[in-house]
Image 1 (tube, rainbow, N blue to C red):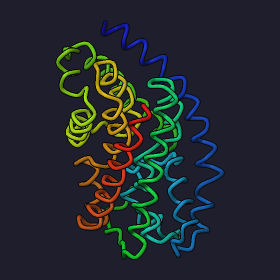
Image 2 (cartoon, rainbow, N blue to C red):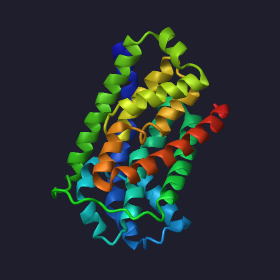
Image 3 (tube, one colour):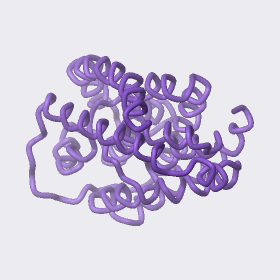
Length: 270
C-alpha cells in the first residue's frame, strides 16, 4: 500500500509542480515586483485585494524573504502591505488550485480559494491602521530561483512520503472515528495543523489527501487546507520574530476566526 500510495500521490502532484515552476519563473520575473512597487500604502479595498491576490499567486518563500523584508520595504512598499503580502503568500501558492483539484476534487479546491481569499482580505484590513515595523536582521542574500525551487521540491517529496506513511500506518477505522464528524474533523485538523510544519504550503497537500483517504470529514480537510497554514506555531514564531508577537497574533487570530466561520458555513456544500 505504501508504494502504491507513493506512486499515486507523486503522479497527482509533481506534474502540476513542474508546470508551476514555469509559471513561477514568469510571475517572479515580469509581474508582481512591479505591481508591489506601485502600491501607495493607503490600504483601500482595491490595494488590499491586490496585495492579497499577489500574495496568493506569489512564487516567493517567506522563509527566504522575511530576513530581507527591510530591504524589500526599500522598494517603497509600506510594511503593513508587505506583512499582509507575506501572510497571503504563506496561505496559498501558485500551484495550489491545480494540486488540490487533482488530489481532492474541484469542489474542495474552489471552496478553499473562497475561504482563504475572504479570510486574507479581513486579516489584511485589520492591519490597515497598524504601524508595522520589520525588525532589523542580519542581511542575507536572496536565494537563487532554481535553488528555491529545488528546496520546495524536496519539501513536496517529504510531504508525499509522509502522506503515504500516514495512510499506510494509521488505522483507517480509528482515524475515521476520531475525525469523521464535522466538529471532530475541525478540531483534529486544528490540533494537527498547529503542531505540524512542513515548510512551503505544497508539502501540506499530500498529507491532506492522506487524511481524506483515512476518513476525515470534508470540514476537517477544508480546515487543514485553509486555516492550518497560518495557525501554526512555527509560522507564528517566524512572523513574531520579524514584526512582533502582538501584531502577529492579531493577524493570525483574525484570519483563523474568519476562516473557521466560513468553513463551518461552506462545509455544508461538501
